[in-house]
Image (tube, rainbow, N blue to C red; front, side):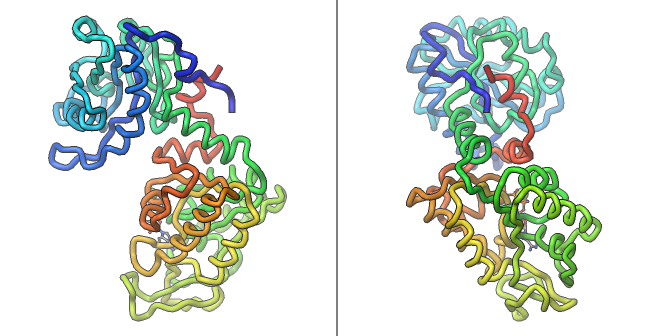
Length: 399
Ligand code: ADP
Ligand code: MG
């Protein structure tokens, strides 16, 4: 990973105006915020700057207003949630550039925090229009990006602003980049990757990239069925992308050539109906799946063997559950393997980094999220990073 400037390098910010790009795309229900995790992620950055005397202007997008004002997507709706987390008053400014923002800055005292309006109300945001970025920058002295989750997009407030202001990674961005670097950039070997989830097609680029990076590629979830089918296994009625068996084969060949061992389940949990604790539930060898059965989880013998693989590794990167974990008992493999990874991380023998919407939910369900070395909540940006892509918002911060 290339180097980037952090808040340690920003110098004296007392009385200075600092634009801080954060993630305020908060889940809402009936006008109120249901989960403030993303605000809490940026709390250290906001408070560090405010306590150093900066005038902090928060920049964020919310929803998909497609370049026009839309009162149902105003960031004024998240002001209370941000105030709750920060424990201080926050002003809302219904613009992102121009005189209204300048006037707001004029009445802010050093250490005050304001939220500017939804950046996506202006078409220049998603077009990364230099004039739009320049207009936002005109009111400020510094730019801090604390939104890794938006760094896979080259937008005016994630990338464009770096061209007009001295730019720095916020604490949450810094933590994320350091964790990801430990997992795939400069990992301690041997490295294992667990890739699961529903479909091969959604993670083709992840799989293609990982085979050249890791020593062990553990494939679970629905996507394992496509790989099993490629090896000639009859997967019955399982979720399986039969048109991608050739691609799966090519990935396994690339893994072979790169010295990466691919692990597929050899026992599986199957059922004729997809329901909680179904009457037709059974565990069998992958070669014994009946024509009317579905594979819904990795079997206990395979899970134990995979745990042994993790014990030989120093680094683990995980995306995607091993089974249909939302429905009992098809959470068993995910929970068991997550607990092994968590225990190894806790005793210090494994660096474990996980990400992905359903993966985070599954690790929380297993009750082990806090024992992983790092859990990314970045979704799309995390997946693009797992694909080995350079994220424009990160590249723009690089020295
Ligand atoms: P993430 O959001 O972490 O990237 P995905 O969205 O790729 O993960 O995949 C998660 C989904 O995969 C879950 O809803 C889970 O139920 C489903 N899944 C996992 N294994 C299977 C399986 N064997 N059959 C059907 N669906 C599965
Ligand atoms: Mg998902």
